[in-house]
Length: 260
Image (tube, rainbow, N blue to C red; front, side, top):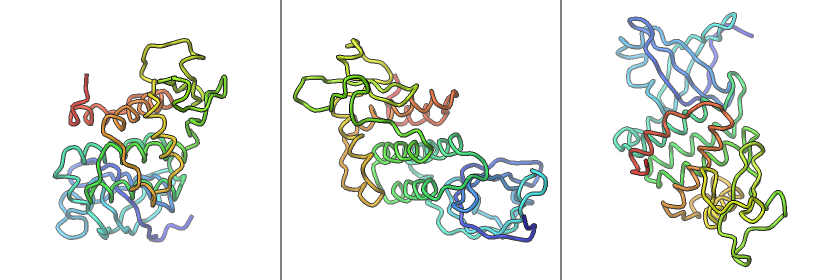
């Protein structure tokens, strides 16, 4: 790898103070994937990095690649989009934080995926322009799982191959976290609800969203209660896959009033 300065576009996932004057910035780039870089003097910068390294910012950066598994060195950053409205609305902010944390958790360092970058950029831009936070993050979460190889199999019951519809009167389904398959209530023999239970209506919305592209997403009008149920199941599925908590989730619940 060349140790001369390189350029790339990226989104800030996280920034933390380091020492008296530096910051360590975690970024996601379509060319590099997730990576961390040190911004020397960023805390005292009045020109080079001022107001540019905040979470969610879209940047064009110049950096020097890391030597021997150390941090990349951030030389300069040009702010392309700050998405400032995300910092003035609590629900949008917590939704963006959840999306950023999901990218942090599900991706590996230096494993680029342009689809993941596009999804995150789309979510931030959509929230910034006033899209409803919960349906937007449901779509993002569902397609991020797909991009990372964990696409839920929502087409039919994995046991009886029943196709979900309104004809047989089955009103709920369970997502099996161990393999991402769907089980109807008749096959599971369980009429109670769990954190992996989806109503027929929620399942139908997820099926529709799963087949949509980013450009088509604006067509999907998902009620808030349905979006909340879908997101709760996707969170439980992701928590099972990651085997760790997703901290931003609790903040989003508090803001939306969904915490029990």
